[in-house]
Length: 437
Ligand SMILES: NC(=O)C1=CN([C@@H]2O[C@H](COP(=O)(O)OP(=O)(O)OC[C@H]3O[C@@H](n4cnc5c(N)ncnc54)[C@H](O)[C@@H]3O)[C@@H](O)[C@H]2O)C=CC1
Ligand SMILES: N[C@@H](CC=O)C(=O)O
Ligand code: NA
Image 1 (cartoon, helix red, strand yellow):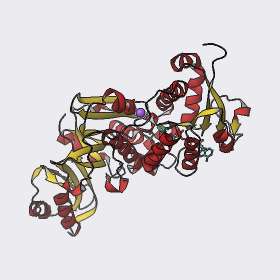
Image 2 (cartoon, rainbow, N blue to C red):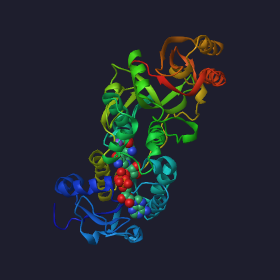
Image 3 (cartoon, protein in one colour):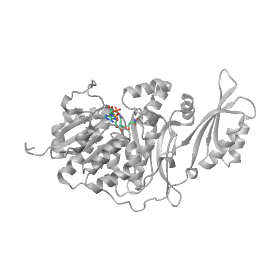
Image 4 (cartoon, rainbow, N blue to C red):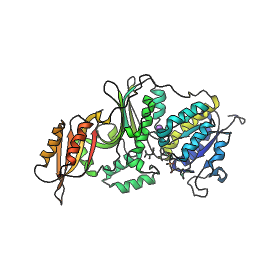
């Protein structure tokens, strides 16, 4: 690399788990990355909330600032690397950077899900680029895979495990018979959990990622309020045992499928029973997996670490290299026109048909099973398996039903009837059952 070669200057916004990971690997692999990119990276400044906080990595104090404006307005900074999270300040900063013609690299799925359309237009208008590989499935290059390696394909179905925190919690609860809270604490300590942890636990984070994948595969921005979204909070150790008894494991599965003859799109995030002998069942801890069912390539499954400092930094740095190459050569593809065959219609969630697992808590007395079976039969749902387990110490029991294929609409109708029955107590869990691969 010649001494006179122009350096590529990066402004970093946010310096937490991922930001420090990016810094660490940019320092340790600087020379190799310069060879790959065509020039050296130089960090122009790092925006932090607190200038004096003790950090795990050593950074020259003069690089730290609490004012993003100077970096965003510095014409020598060509790439902004946004790793602060949230969508308030960060939206303003990203708009400003793109309007100034800079490229932005971000790991922020909420930002891309909620504002990707506008930000991509801004980038196209002003000549910058927007890169977001780390926003979906952490270190797995799924965005590059969809955009490049699988570009010729159309996808009838994409599904997978997209939230590392949930998968970590479900794995350790089942493997070690632990309760939810201590495992959540461990996930926090490992840097997996969002600043707003309800995003991880209630399915919102996986939903953001699902929307981004749906846009990449179908060029359609699906509002999250048109999705079915449920997180892992209601899954108990009891459900894990029942699932195993039926030959399944419970995973938080995000899915994008085309329904019916018109290929209308349905997006969902739900705790799901996956067959014990499937690849998904073996994806453990903070690993993610995405199965992309392409019509040309056939099914492709990508598995890798979906959360944590290093895997996420790996994806961010891959984007920095792409952004750097684009800056130096100005030949990187900018934006893409919609794919042929795009599904422009969204499906009604009630139209989804599949098998379901339902766990109810019921009064432990005669006739209850007949009442429950009656509600399902009234709604045209046929039951494949029933398990009843009495609870020790009180007059209640768990009643688990696995259905044959039925529509979400008929399932909801049956649950509605059951909701009005005195013998059905408290909360219940409903999980789709995934077909064998
Ligand atoms: N931690 C992970 O495994 C992954 C995180 N991400 C995404 O990466 C982004 C960063 O995540 P983490 O590093 O885990 O979060 P973090 O909470 O560890 O770090 C964010 C840092 O940004 C700083 N920050 C936030 N707002 C700021 C502001 N207005 N001014 C100055 N500093 C500000 C915070 O003080 C914090 O130090 C988020 O969008 C997250 O969703 C994506 C993939 C994986
Ligand atoms: N909180 C997220 C981090 C990566 O996106 C997760 O747990 O997957
Ligand atoms: Na990724």
